[in-house]
Image 1 (cartoon, helix red, strand yellow):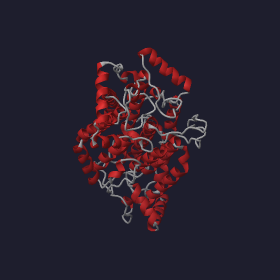
Image 2 (tube, rainbow, N blue to C red; image 1 turned 120 degrees about the horizontal axis):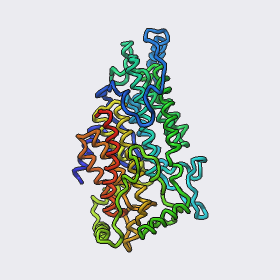
Image 3 (cartoon, rainbow, N blue to C red; image 1 turned 135 degrees about the vertical axis):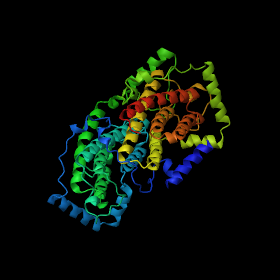
Image 4 (cartoon, rainbow, N blue to C red; image 1 turned 90 degrees about the vertical axis):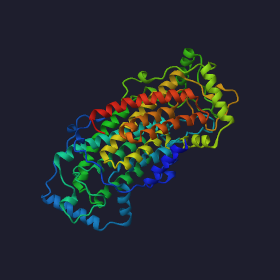
Length: 513
């Protein structure tokens, strides 16, 4: 285990990152400006996840660079660059020429802020967060792992699709960047031959703030502020004139509409169930298998966490039953007793290293959850390989949709088998972590992580060993923590890998990477 963390630390230090940014609430993700390793001139032909052909979204042909209107825009851009303030310079430095990374970072920050369990009312009852009245109490949403995985999936898919459309028109119209037209313009970022119309930064900015507004309605003012700051930085950095930006926003609006339509009908609004339905799911499992999970919280919330998340529409897997794990061993069976003995042994003889691993991977309340961890890992390889925004968005899109699919598969398995936690089946057993409010089998950490590792290993094969090592460690951390049996972790890892392969198979269709 130590060698894995030494390897991780070396990557972090090489990129100039602080170790603290890999844990808890994300901090400012620092990295050196870099020249894009490729432009992907054929990126406008890549397969999309939400929209159809890029030509289904239309934008006007830009004015030629000889037109008076364009000359005027160049003059306005130079004036803005010449009068830039200190705060505006900081914004240019922050947003960079790969702002997909920044909006992903903001998404994780907000997810951590909202990852708080709603507390009981004064009378001991519970009120669930309600999107119809997001101010609450309690505020909407509760950004638990299923919610966060879905948020990241829609954010990343919309960013990617918008950029595929943007790339199509960039290389159709081939309008040069302002600094290629006027040599007196010195951009803040490394120069490239990437056409400027429509603006990829503006498209990413609009898509991101609108998807995040949908997912976190109480953050609308904050997101609008960051959006406008990002748009201003595009001119202050000398990489886009106003018509580039306007065209990027037109593309983004169309993509957001499609993403919202899908999200409104994917079944998430039914994932959290009333008490009667939650009880009936448990009773069906008991009739079928002879066991059911019982909530061991104090005070007990009325229902488990999103019992019907396993019925939410998936991105890559045709049918959730195809990736449902096989039945777990019955309590009292030889395999169960073997894994129960292992848990008791760890509880009696926990090493400092095992405890640290359990705590580092806990991803509990106030964190960006297990999916967030894998977005952090993806950033390391993205920056190391100097990916352009389109390639960056593709990595996040296929990884995060796979992680969401893994969550759907895991929750389907959890509530189909309704398997009890170790604190219920092992007399006198105590964990070093809080016991989650949902059934044990399979392990969510294991399933999320194996899916993330599978996809990242495809995109970055040179780092595959490290991704697999992290996934294995995420799985075993839940055993050390006492909240999962080994068979939860082993089968969850198999399940996540299988789900991840569906995403990889779709990603391969472009012949890219």
